[in-house]
Amino acid sequence: MSIDTEDQAALRASVRDLLSKHSDSAAVRAAITTEIGYDAALWSKLCEQIGVAALAIPEEFDGVGAGLGEVHVVQEELGRTLTPSPMLGSAILAAQALLLSGDDDACSRLLPGVASGESTLALCWAGAAGWSTFGVEATEDALIGTASYVLDGHIADTLLVLTADGFYEVDPAAEGVSRRRVPTMDPTRTLAEVTFSGVRGRPLEWSEDLVDRIRTVVLIALSAEQVGAAAAIVEQTVEYTKSRKQFGRAIGSFQALKHRMADMYTLVETARSMTYAAVATQSADDAAVAKVYCSEALQQITSEAVQLHGGIAITWEHDAQLYFKRAHGSAQLFGQPSTYLPSLAQAAGL
Image (cartoon, rainbow, N blue to C red):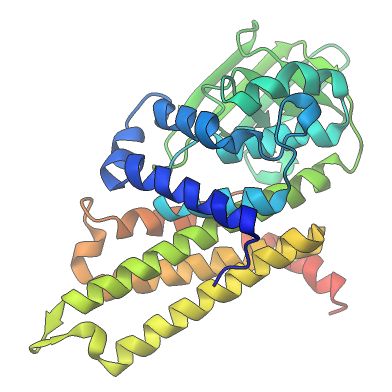
């Protein structure tokens, strides 16, 4: 089911067509072995031919000025193919952090390059314990500490550092900055640790609610990606059960398996509804609900997919294990689902 507008449907078709030609399973597997963790040529095509990085950037900063609905479409399609790219980390998380800060000067300097796909940003935010803490501290003179789980932090052209007391721009080549790509459970997602040892950052505009506003946007974008991955692995599982035979019959004809796949499909459509509701309201609570539901739905769906495929699903050659790893990796991103439940319960008066 889709509730795309005419323009969104055209955008979806364009992205899906391009990814079908340049981001099949073999291409994804080749991309994750590169030093940068994604296919730079494909990213250039997505930016130049479709303008994906420019979607949520206002026209005054050389963007398209579209909304989260269009971002949702692109994220779904990237999730379907598990395509590694700087979309979530640079074009959404970091770019939106800069926009939400209200610092027009920084936006004018940095966002045109992001919109064109020529440069990337990375938001340094979380501490080792996760996104409820800050990894870097701002003293009177400098930035000190280590930001963990930084999306594309090892290759970004500019670092944006979010602390408890301010927001800063840092040149990754500055003295005192060190960064390294870290191993991840999900090989299609690159994360880095970025350490600041007495580094002077350029102060940016900042407000106390900036973290909550950033979190709302990125949770919506992440949930859209999860929906795309869930829909794709359900489709692949259905196709597999049509061809795999046991006792002289396709296993997809067995009533018990039909029921399990119907439940998987229901989870996908419910998750999609959750994300569209969050897009419509752009409220923190709806974004958190989408994060929790879509994370748990994708984990359940990929677990079912592995069981329905059988032993082949856990081999490196099969894509089911990549979707399984994406499910569990993305569930941890920006906080485990369980971390959002107390505030949601409080908001519901429970």
